[in-house]
Image 1: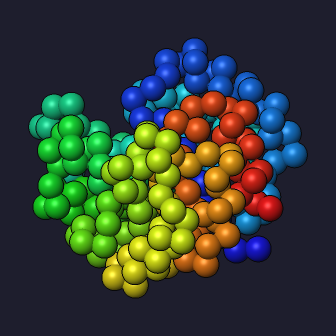
Image 2: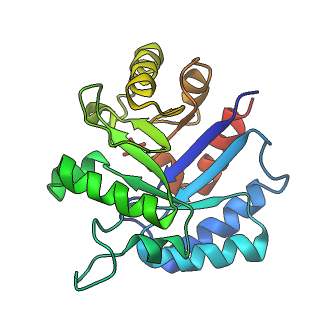
Length: 223
Ligand code: PGA
């Protein structure tokens, strides 16, 4: 079985109490751990990273942590920014370049390249999101995530064989050996992506907010 990466992107959702409920339910679902070939990652918002890290240790949860974003600057006078070294205290991974960051926060290629530099310097593994083959990809990212904008949060998931072709092209272009798909991934359609030759995982948003669904998604991805 090939290695599979599943990264749940919580976006701007959940209080600490809601996250605790999620952990409790996920724990019950994942009592037998997860398949050896699967890496399960959760990307909560910044204030939940510390809480999540504690819970992972406390319950020995089969999960790693990602931040959803990182500062393009090092430590310094950058009010509101969270530097890569601060992220690294809690998370191994960081998502950079999500289409919502590009759209709502006007993040451009240069700014994203600076984030990649900072993340690399801090030793974070980078999941870099793009909406197609024309999007620039900075050197040295660890995972390239193909997320067609029309598929995000709409229930209109991309055709798996089209996603496969685009991810194959993205892996070649970025010299990145891991390519994943994101956009309306569900427990029902996850296998249709994972079974594609070039697709090494998925990046579910909405489906990761429900602990039962996320645990099932991980189970389906490992079969
Ligand atoms: P979605 O989000 O699964 O809710 O479509 C995916 C994403 O934006 O990463």
